[in-house]
Length: 211
Image 1 (tube, rainbow, N blue to C red):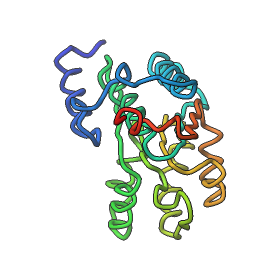
Image 2 (cartoon, rainbow, N blue to C red):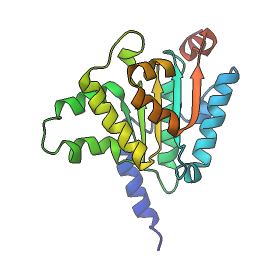
Image 3 (cartoon, rainbow, N blue to C red):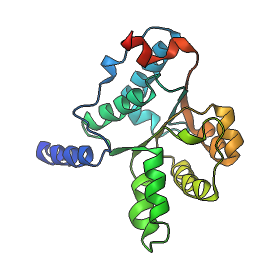
């Protein structure tokens, strides 16, 4: 049996509503500019990830990691992938969330008796999760608190164990994340299908389009 177009459309609308950002206004991957080897690799791997998603999602390595300083287009790239997966047929149940927003939510309800069922499940059960700006305020000198570790590990570990595709953008280097929490870093590394690393002034997307 196959779902009718009407049901698929309703499912897609529900997914868009819960995506965490405005799908209609988000840029598509075709709008992602390529000007050097790193941006070329980023677009190529993103296209590959979208095109082969049905195969990749079944593999142990199905996470998409993007490292780099502010202004490199990490958020645009991550959202473009999510947008494409949601708009395909059948749509993928994907959600995007800013790291600090996710942490604020989980910390605020950590004593709620429905914490895991109602709130943590938002981030651990969706088919694809984009965590944008992971550990942003910890990128250079900040330290992770016990609460940071507890809630982030719960999300990362759950998706790691379930083999659920996860997209992560961060200003932290891989070494910085490992230094903050080794267990979190190695779960990311072991699941990585792609690791894009933006480094250097030539990778600053904002300055390039502004200039």
